[in-house]
Amino acid sequence: MIPILYLSHCGSSIGGGEKQLAYLVTNIDRKRYQPLVVCPDDGVFVEHLKHADIPTVVLPLPSWRKVKSLIARYRAAEKLTALAKTHNTKLVHTSDSWFNPYVLHIRKRLGIPVISHVRTLLTTDQVRKYKFNQMDRIIAISEESKTALVQAGTDAQKIDLTLNCVDLDAFQLIPQSKPSTEYVVGIVGRIEPFKRQKEFIEIAAAVIAQNKNVRFHIIGTALNTPEHRAYEQDVRQLALKYRLQEFVCFKGHRTDMPNVMQELDLLVTLSAGSVIAEAMAAGKPVIGTPIGSTADMITDGVTGYIIPLHRTEAIASRILEFATDPNLNIHIGQQARKAAEEAFSVEKHVQKVQDVYQGLISTP
Image (cartoon, rainbow, N blue to C red; front, side):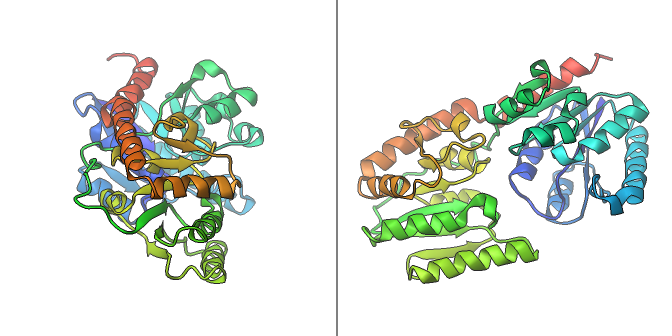
């Protein structure tokens, strides 16, 4: 077997990146590859991996670029290298671009190939800062991410475009037994500025002004930091300002995404991410904005709609259209499920990643 070392963004929570990493390591060909996941902290994701019988190690990895972390990062990099050597690692795959310096340290010490998985939007300065041009391979989840890498001077031949995946068996298209008088629109993700829940409240206000049978669910919570707590408070205050207490429900953190999707009639995402694949697999239409992987996953007018960010009235208009036309909702949802089956299967995703591995690792 070929030992592979994976670096996870975190071990204390499960976001989109952690879900995608879990899909990969739990479905990889275990007759050929032997995964070992390193998490920078302990918690629910570490337990999830261990429960799935994936070898997992908790090793703090301080921010590489902070001056105060200079000594700590070197020690952590040496511990990580020693772990890779003990594991007889043949390849290192970081699921978080910010750990690029750590995997490059390992490559320098052990001479093994390294891969960086780009799950976020990058500026050209970030591409250069985190030395993507020194990676042996890069896996990007969107054309937009790939474009940023190339514009910053990264060799396009190093970049593989691989969309996020979803467990199609877990997210089933379940027909509604009877129509509901309320139409439920959801936004899913950590409550933070990048996810734009404040804009979601603005959209809700525009919709409710015309149709009081629509309900809005905010699924997720904020990290326990002053910045994120303050943003969540701003979101809640905005809902109060528009007197939306009856129409907006803060559902908190949920780990049962298949059930969450069945509670929704429509997903709105103002960022991007694997939640799009989850909604489509559940047969739900998606309204998104042209950010990140959204345009790679949604076919405008077929499986949902892509509307420019900040066009609150246009997004509200589409929501009202869905809310008053059950047949449209069903048709678009069915098309979304069909597209998910064709593009987002775990098997296809894992095979694409294994093909990247195969190109880097010589057959024993």
